[in-house]
Length: 159
Image (cartoon, rainbow, N blue to C red; front, side, top):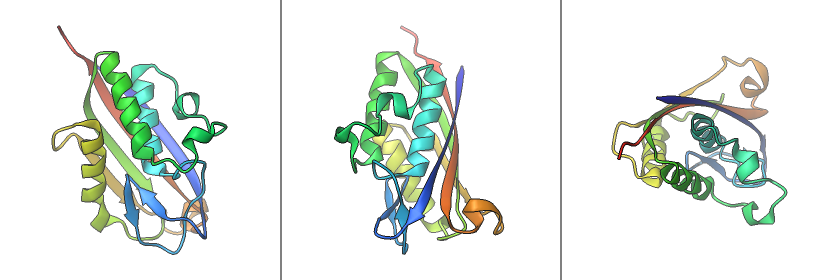
């Protein structure tokens, strides 16, 4: 069994769509970043790459490369899924949490789980996504930004 941990943060800004786990969430602001700034998917990517011993998001998809400008993070996740298959690594499960004061995300979590699972070709129950606030504390509590944490477990495929 191989375990990886991922963490990501992005600032909230006007004029951008809010995309979390590949799902567009209605909100007055979105996350700033080179790609679609999907903080949840970025944390998941880093957890998967960490478990594989394959570096991090920035090493594979640098923000200095225009190919990744405004790209959907699900496309990046799909590439990571291919890398895992090449290395004969199978995803056992992914567990992640989005930290945001607003908007309320509970109604969007099943769609996020489905988008992540579908992108990686996973069966139901292997992706779990949660959301929490910081009770008004810190940069997430003030609405300045959002964060996400993720843990992924991989196992080497036999045969």
